[in-house]
Image 1: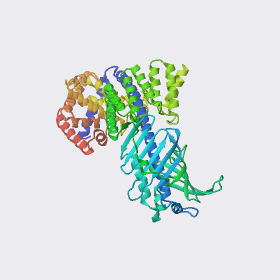
Image 2: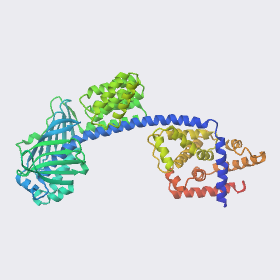
Image 3: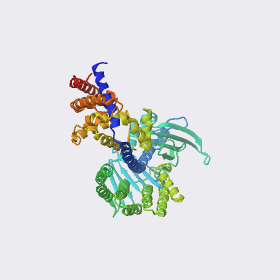
Image 4: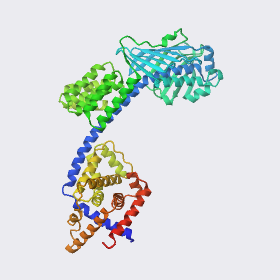
Length: 424
Length: 181
């Protein structure tokens, strides 16, 4: 054994043998007891954060889906009409021949708005190549959206709440531009449409069928586009060479109800240019991009105070500011919920319940309030008001049905609590 | 390693038995590391307590990258160094305390001789720079490889190896003639 090995052996003999017996009596139980408490609190806190994050992700995704989906649908119709895939029975060139000058489209049908089927009208003004004045207007009972490539601006108007949101260079414009540009990359005159479309879409399939009702020959096309996680199907009349109807899903497998079900398509209506202008309705509250950025900053600061610094009173003040500044944003709903959770952390349980109830009143027209109902139910349970808790948990199930995975928070937890209360 | 991954999963789910198993599994090694790095044996419990409570506070979000034992050993080493720096346990009471610990079956003369030897070793260790002392203790008593120490401490493996070599050489010279090597 060399000297280095001997030193190592000496160290082992000195400390490995001595440390264990030197440990104070009862040390293990003291350490394990405190560590267990710490672990329990950490797991509970983590679950709360995880649930909040999960809720947030879903809210944001859902909010983004509407506009993205609308943009993709609209532009997809433009592409389908501009470009094409050749076959002996039908080709896009024939369609294009039918529409020498595509100026605009008007699509009507049913759309999925937060799992609520609503009739919609969507008008698309195609870019003319020179001035690139592409624009889109989408209207349904709950929302109007006007997107203009000209100044890269998107207007949203929620008529019930009388709120206008103006965003510039947002994701909606990017999507719209992307699809318009996609169509422009391969102008149909070049004859390279097929290659381009096949580059864009996956799983392109087209079949010629006879419509049993009318006896007319039709071409059915299905395809998907992975980057947008969308799939599309549409039907072309081989006589008129025009797209008759189409559907779009926000998944690649065409599963479930489509996000958009375009049932009629009208080409080249007389639409004045100012139809794609947006006039702010009198009395509407206007939220700008700058307001949104400020809200996001406030919210981020509040999140840091809540999750990292455990400064709940300070966090609550910032969450309130976020809500008051942009009450229509999803962030505002979430902020109000977080105000409730701040009260919870501060032991102000009555105020916690008041906050959740206020949030539910304020956003009663929205679906997806199940998370707030869940926390309301939990707060009632904490106060021993089991009947009210039961009602809140049941509202949670109703509010988030179809929006949340039934086997995950909050639906799963709500069901468990309902069973627990009923079992008592 | 496989057991550690399973334990970590259970620990993240809030399983108290998993926490206890981790504690019992690694307590001997961690005690050795703490004992070798602390100037005061009374601080051993404090250090182990702080490390385990802090570790437990990560339940639900703890991610095991590498060896769990290595992670805990480095936590103990860092905490021990901080305790020494805070000076709360600066008194060199360790060697005197040790005598009651080991080898209860040894005779009085033999026990006295071992105590003397431990005193010398402990004092020699305290004369090493913190970084060298930490690497030697983690490598020898924590049974960690240089690469593991490097990963946990954010240093390069070469730096760790150098610290070990220099530290060991210095320890040799400090112990030369003091104890039988």
